[in-house]
Length: 163
Image 1 (tube, rainbow, N blue to C red):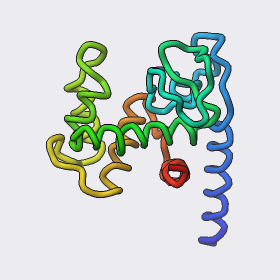
Image 2 (cartoon, rainbow, N blue to C red):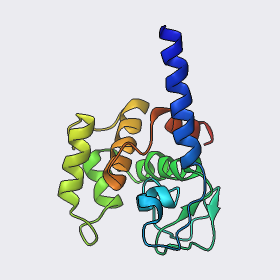
Image 3 (cartoon, one colour):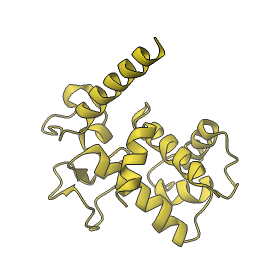
């Protein structure tokens, strides 16, 4: 019986990820009722900055946001940005990462920091030390950007393996 439910859960997850791994039509303001991050296969709503991300669609059809071929590529870009670029800049706390990622000129940064902190259970000024810390922060940020669990574990690990 446990195996049946495990197989069923796998099928349902595969079905959802298959839907998410298609390029969405962005010709309408909100086609299919999906969040911008899902339409663009960009769960972090990363802006187009001239970086040539693997799997990025150019030119973007939804300025100023980047668009990706699949959710795996969009998640990969988010992981690289936060775990590599920001960490190399010395940004290794929720407060540091979110303050750079979602500056007050464009966001209610303190609310964003608090939301990520609550969702992860981590103090916003605690240094992120483990792979699990970074995974949880990235997932919480994608949740904040999209309003739901946009980066499940399987997608995170698949994207992380591509780096």
